[in-house]
Image 1 (cartoon, rainbow, N blue to C red):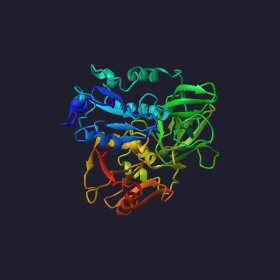
Image 2 (spheres, one colour):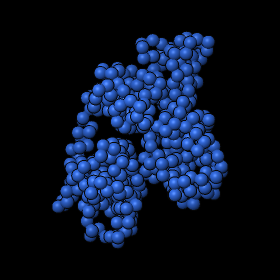
Image 3 (cartoon, rainbow, N blue to C red):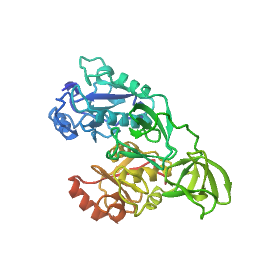
Image 4 (cartoon, rainbow, N blue to C red):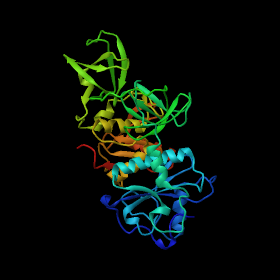
Length: 412
């Protein structure tokens, strides 16, 4: 396998200093493209080399699923000579990587670059002088083409929530939703759809769109309540023009009493109650209190609003309201939390309000040391339940013990 030099021997001998990371290195497993390996397989392989475990920080399976290897703070074993200043990600396969993998890779790189902005993206073969061809394509050129490959158009979402899917087409599974006022960078157009990158979190997917992009209007405020209604006039008895969700971005004009005037997509004016919106530079003090406002909201895979949302959307929306930018998906959130927080090895009874709890494919928030708040398919809603009960049930269902992460970035 063209993953690393065998003379690297035992793996990392220390922690990475965040300021030292100047390379984001893309690898491939150099295994047959039809072989569905994952991080555990690479772990077994690298242990067989006599290392301390998997040498990569992330592994991307053929279906695009990202799996954590070493924590970002731990020196890897993936490129001899630069392990002390790099992070490594491995694409499973040899020469033909799936669109889902490349989509997932892009999301990871956006996430890493947000944490390590001085780092550059390149392949193993270009990180050091080597005879290896891994990852068997020019990763640096691919990344630059990805960044430059858009049409240059920037769209602004004009619907309360715009569905984002993995492929272009109608009636496809929901990946996420883009909210009113958020900006989308157009990467590609195809038959009434556009592949876009969401400016909020770097998420890439397909949305239905006309041929002309919507002009952008600088937003001044964001919605801070789970739902807010835009009325035709500044009074509650006036007709409702649009329903907006938490995180939606609006442009506020005049204020009349407790009402703010906002711009509507048709060029008209709507009115929202003042407490439903806050200026961009004002944030909540307690992100858990924000998440608690969604109690009872229905569970919807890929949903990102009070009309329906999933576990990672609840976490992302609550953290954003508190001024903390988090990735969209739970797997990405785990990797982000590992890089920006501290793991609580024992979990109970050391958990406290605001700790994040992760399982494969799921995340929840500790409401207290004894209760878990999460959007989940078991209750089909955002619910609170005893933490011990949730641990027993979800540990059994996933076959993995929960991991508790305490964010150092979260508000006090």
